[in-house]
Amino acid sequence: MRTVFPTDAFRQLTTPFYYYDTDLLRATIRTIQEEVSKHAGFCVHYAVKANANPRLLNIIGQSGLGADCVSGGEILAALGAGIPKHRIVYAGVGKSDWEINLGLDKNIFCFNVESIAELEVLNELAAHKEKTARVALRINPDVKAHTHAKITTGLAENKFGIALCDMDEAVRAAMAMEHIDLVGLHFHIGSQILRMDDFAALCNRVNDLQRHLEQNKVKIEHINVGGGLGIDYNYPDKLPIPDFKSYFATYARHLELREGQTLHFELGRSIVGQCGSLITRVLYVKQGVAKQFAIVDGSMTELIRPALYQAYHQIENLQDEGAMETYDVVGPVCESSDVFAKAVDLRHVKRGDLLAIRSAGAYGESMASCYNCRKLPPSYLTEDL
Ligand SMILES: *Cc1c(COP(=O)(O)O)cnc(C)c1O
View 1 (cartoon, rainbow, N blue to C red):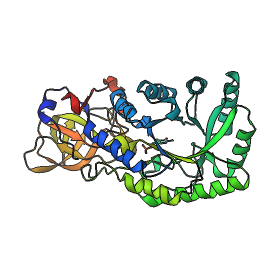
View 2 (view 1 turned 90 degrees about the vertical axis):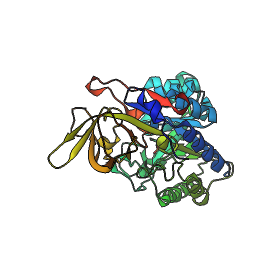
View 3 (view 1 turned 30 degrees about the horizontal axis):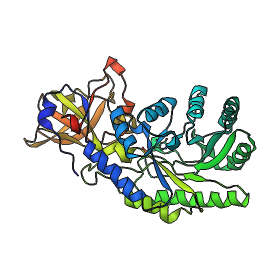
View 4 (view 1 turned 180 degrees about the horizontal axis):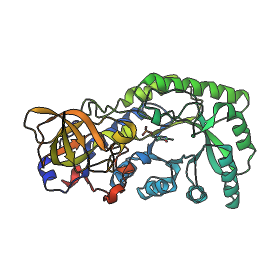
């Protein structure tokens, strides 16, 4: 299921723009649903922060997946895309009162709560409305994921979640609160994780915690293991649909679910990452002292991952001719970090060539900014061109 770019149609369009291969997106979602259906009680929530493009969100909403939101705006976006409220979970270390009230008014499935301070506010706001908030405590499992430091979240000391050593106190607090219904435990160890043993390590930790809670007569309806399944940035066409079979099988094998318990996943990158590309035009080729620069009209304002995480994205010259040469591909923004890639091999680049920066479907458009007074770029789907 390789993405085939409609290059002739692209030539008529103003760059930069995002291109989304919706055939690939739909095939990815179908694969998830096939794999999930093999395991009783598994539910997938799409992590809206990966890409909140309304048309993609509609496709995802129509497919029946739930949503994982990290802000009130995302809850509204998910509802707007037809994702039912009983499939919406809401996480975030800093929930504003209006966001909590929105979640309460909409009766979402669960608040993933990250501190005792937040529990107290949630209890108070729910009391005002004479409601009970369904809560999962986000516990920091202290499991190290093999990924970039800026995207691991599961270590002991972290702004996210409740430390393991504080779990019992948080559980006691939640159970004592009149307007809080403690229904779940939530975890998320990081993003762009490709080693199944990292997820297995999380399962082992969850099993220990469940046994510990049961000894204290605490019963939990559901476990939420977050997201984090990675994609292949080096070879986007090799496995455009991530290995969901192994991913879900790892949880089925290692996580000891109790009778009637459901297991929730919050997948972002692995759902939308490979379907998106940033299409940009070459403005100039500048001969440097020891290298040559392909200066393009796209920048870190459309795709910040290389600048923010030193992330690698494969780049292709869509003009399929000419010998391979080595370039630094850079954007026009006034920051030295506005570099898409250093020393990459591309077919001979000239002014006007279109480049596809691959695997940009996740954390591309959703992190776009207007720095340098740039405009937010448009997006096109397969069915548009
Ligand atoms: C970002 C995030 C996710 C999604 O992560 P991916 O790596 O995109 O799958 C899921 N859950 C939480 C709590 C998150 O913060």
